[in-house]
Image 1 (cartoon, helix red, strand yellow):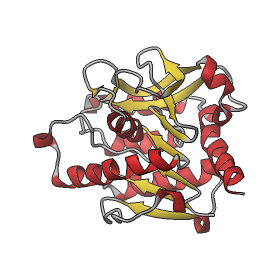
Image 2 (spheres, helix red, strand yellow):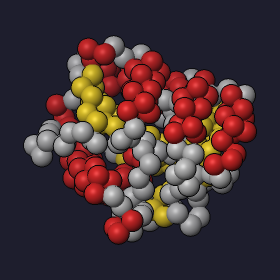
Image 3 (tube, one colour):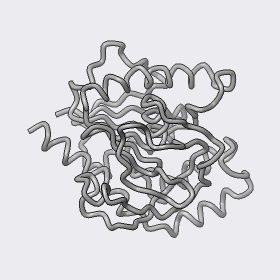
Image 4 (tube, helix red, strand yellow):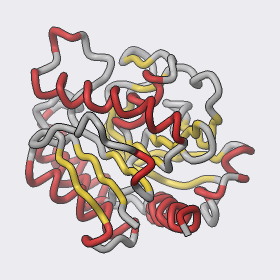
Length: 247
């Protein structure tokens, strides 16, 4: 069994920390995964999603909804690779979990509006509430109807994609978790992240427009008080479901 972890963070410290968080919260051993940092390596054009037990996609500073002229060549290239992959994932219904950036990619490919004018959220903890469908979904097994999670995003899916299922909602951003088909999932929040991971990202991205830079230390102190252990279970559940499907 091999899991594919795709990363879009060009900052090595952030990428390594995110990768370690995926392994820890997913209870994955390094030998079980193939890691591709898209800032360093092109996604093979002939990559077959069905060849992997599951695919996990991390976040990054780029936005699908940014106008083309505002995207760096690297951001445009990484996005193009993801946009080419997603239709194949959907067609094969390959187990997939897209975290934050993955929500924008999935929504865009499925034809939903993705924008920065309505549902962006500042860096910090939020309450997520399961929908009726979410309470019945195996990926959310053992997770309470209301749980805390960490967010920080400029863009969001602004309407439920046609054919998708709404699994979890937030007050400021309604589409916190969705599913397409039976096995393709995306979260707007970061199920891999704990306060220590967000503290690092706050320091590294303080000049990227997510918040006024002078607020960094206050944000770090605020996220340190967050209990987001229930959100972490989503990754463990995802890995368990992938293994059960492959067995």
